[in-house]
Image (cartoon, rainbow over all chains, first blue to last red; front, top):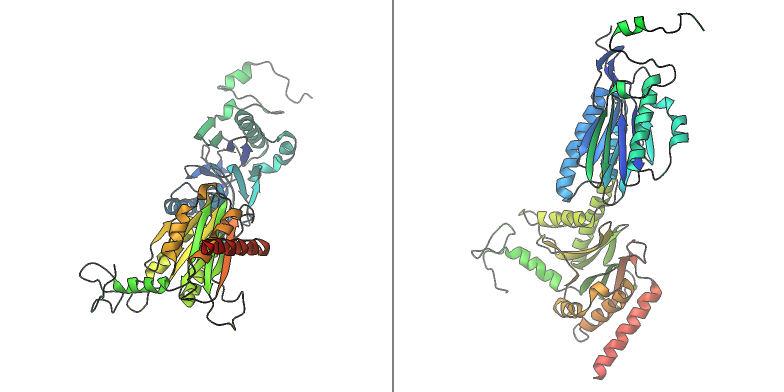
Amino acid sequence: MDLKAPHSMGTTIIGVTYNGGVVLGADSRTSTGMYIANRASDKITQLTDNVYICRSGSAANSQIVSDHVRYFLHQHTIQLGQPATVKVAANLVRLISYNNKNMLETGLIVGGWDKYEGGKIYAIPLGGTIIKQPFAIGGSGSGYLYGFFDQAWKEKMTKDEAEQLVVKAVSLAMARDGASGGVVRTVIINSDGVIGNFYPGDGLPLWHEELESHNSLLDILNASGPEPMNI
Amino acid sequence: MSSIGTGYDLSVTTFSPDGRVFQIEYAAKAVDNSGTVIGIKCKDGIVMGVEKLIASKMMLPGSNRRIHSVHRHSGMAVAGLAADGRQIVARAKSEATNYESVYGEPIPVNELAGRVASYVHLCTLYWWLRPFGCGVILGGYDRDGPQLYMIEPSGISYRYFGAAIGKGKQAAKTEIEKLKLSEMTCREGVIEVAKIIYKVHDEAKDKAFELEMSWVCDESKRLHQKVPDELLEEAKAAARTALEEMDAD
């Protein structure tokens, strides 16, 4: 077991706009090689009252970038005399990502609400590009979600529809991606403020061929299931 | 409130016993000697106008511009020493582009005004620099709507509905106060500004002048630009007619 391997958040991160705000979602697995260093991490980090960021890739790099942007945004808010816009937050993130691309390895999704543009999502992948999208997915688990979103995404969803979509998507990715897992955390941001939700892993729906969790092995022994090696 | 500040007016780093910095007050006098500059905030944008006194018949019309664009969405009209004004405009342009490259959005007008004011004020703090001999009217249209600011040589900056600096500022302010700005569009505002500048121009003391006007409004798609030629001609014609009607009385 290589405990000296850098902490990486394999991760599945998602940001989705809906009619009135945004919903951000993420899994909670932080791994050091094959060991899960933190099985309940919070990958959705606050930048300002109205803007949050989903972090993926190197845990250390993404934390440092978030810390720097939070610092600059705080000063900017004081200077401006009003909350910073999502666009400004995203731009500060991409300047750091782009100008230090040789040293950093982190994919980020910035999402939030401001009074001028409403709910907005900006994706800032590895190289430091910035792209505004109605929804964005990132992290190793996102590879399994492109087709899913092509079909399941629609414009002008309600808040509940959007959150259900996010939870379902993270849960699907967690089922297929070894580097994603644990619990699902969501953050909903709109004009009324911010609400964070928590969905424990054993409460998530089971997908094809996933086995139910049991509290005790004795339950499995007593159940009369199919004979092993039977097709 | 003018008095001689003998002995206390040699340096901008000296206060007089009654708490005044005379060098800054003298700098303001340089502004008062210049052609009138006005700015008004209408309901859909800003209009600025300059009474550009022509020193020589040999000067090409349209040269020596007194109104400059600082960024796509904002512009500055300068009164006082023209060379000093160029310096302030250059600084404002640099602040605006720098803000946009860091924050990814056009600089809010109140932020720009604050930075220009800080820069002007900076030059009143050191004995080896002299204060700027110019006042500036800054008009811009950002996501919070149209805004008008005036920055004086002391570095003071306030937000205005209507502002005037230069020779005819008292008369111009009186005229501006008569206007119902909140109900006026910029198209109407252009005519009114032209009328005011023609009215406050002193035919006896200063011979010829050129009217320079700019606007930033919904009609100009929130871009700061020279007032279109036909509208400018229309405004000049209306101003001359108004003047004749006054003289006829």
